[in-house]
Image (cartoon, rainbow, N blue to C red):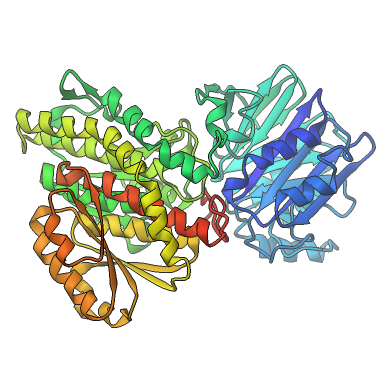
Length: 608
C-alpha cells in the first residue's frame, strides 16, 4: 500500500526517483525515503510527512549524486510513522539497502533468529528483517543471498535492493505485491505502478510471483525462484501520459469524475456491435453461459458496491442467483461453490490482495474465474480464466469514480449477455437496453453540468457530524457507494441503510436537522420510499432526494430534490451516483480536506 521507484542508468537517479514517487502519491503514504549509490557508499535520506519534505531535504535530489538508487513512500503497518521506520532500510554496515511493499508474516521468528546472531534492530518494521537477513546470507553473490532470503520468508513483498559492492546492478523481486520494470535508451526502472515511469517508457514488464530481476543500465535479466533465467514479454501501455496529469482541474478526483462519460463509452463501445452484444473476452459460448446456475461476485470497497448493483441487475435480467461477498470474508467463511457456479472478481488495480486471495481460493476449487479489472497485465488479469477490462485509464485519486462507473457498465454488459444466452429476454428488449446503455455518457455529462447547484447545497453541510443514505433495491447499492464517497474524503460519519430497515433501529439516530439522502430511482418502490422519507422527516431530518425526472410526487415529501435523466431502472446507478460523487467532493473541498489523498487510505490495498 505504498510506492516503490528504482532507477539505474546514465542520468542522475535521485531526481528521477523523486519524480516517480510523486506520481505514486495517490497510493497513500505517511513517510518517504530515498537511497542512492554515490560512488563510494549508499547515501540515504528519509522524512515523515509529504514527499515535499523529502524533496526539500535533498534539494530535489541534487544533494544525492549517483546513477543507481531506490525510493519509497511508506504507509505504516509495522511501527508508527517515523524516520526510523521509513524506508529504505539497511543492514548494520549500511552496505545493503532495501525498500519493501507488503508484509513479512514470519518476521518475528526471523527477527529472533537474527538477534541471536548478534544483529541489532533500529526500527519496528518487518522490512529491516529482510535487510539483516540479506546481510546474513550475503557472501559476495547478491543473487544467491536474495534466493536464500526469499525461500525463507513468508508473506508478500515487492522489493528493490542495492548492494554497495555491486554498484552497477539494481535488484528487484516480487510475491503478491505489484511490481513492474521498464527500460528506455538511458536506463532501467522498477516501480510499483505504471504512472511512476510512464514519462520515461511505455514498454513495461510485469514481474510475476517469486521472480527476481537483475537490472543494469542497459539491460535486465529475469529469474524464477529455482534460479533459472527466464524470458519475459513486455506490455505496451497505451495510456496518454497526460492522462495521469490534472489537466487544469483542481483535483484528480474532479478530473476523473468528468472523464466518466468517456470511460463508459470506451468500456461499452467495443462490446456493442451491429445492435448486438459481443464480449469476446468471456471465451464462453451461448451453451456454456446457459448452464451457469449461480454467480459469486467477490470484491472490496467500491468494487463490492458495484457488485451489489450487479446482483440486482443480473438476477433481474438473467434470472441467475447471485451472491456478493466482501473478498476479505469470502475464503474465510468456507464458501459453498456448487457445480455450475461462476466466480466474478472485481478490482480496479487487479492487485487487491484480498480479492486476489479469493480468486486463488476459488480457482483451487476448480471454478471458472472472470476478472473485471482496469489494469492490463495485473495479477488478477493474469490469473483469472477470462478477463473483462474496464477501459478507464489511470485513476489517480484514492476515492474511485470513473473506475467504479466502468465496473458498473461492465456488469450491465455481462448481465445482458447472460440474459441473451439464457433467453430470459428477447431481441427487442436487448436492443432497447443497449440503446439505453449508449445514452448513458451523454446523460452523465448533463448531470456533471449541474455541479454548481450541488456545490451550493453541499456548502450547507460542511459542519455536519452525521449524514445518512437510504434506498431500496438498486437504490440501496447506490446509497452504499454514495455514503462511502462522502466519508472517505470528507471524514464526516456517514452510513447507508436499506430504507426498509429504518424502523428496526436506525431511525433512533435521526435528530433535528440531520441530513438524510434518499435515493429513489426504482418506479415500483417510489411509494415505499416516500413513506420512508416521511418517517425520517417526522423525526426532524432534512431530506435530499435523488430520483428520476418523472417522479415529481417526491417534492411533496423531500426538502431538496436532484433529478436524473430517464433511463432503464437497472442502469439508474450510473446516473444517480454522479450527484452523490459531486456532493461528497464539494463537502470535502469546503472542509479543506486533501481530496485526492485522504488520511489513512491507500489507492491499491495490496496487503490483507
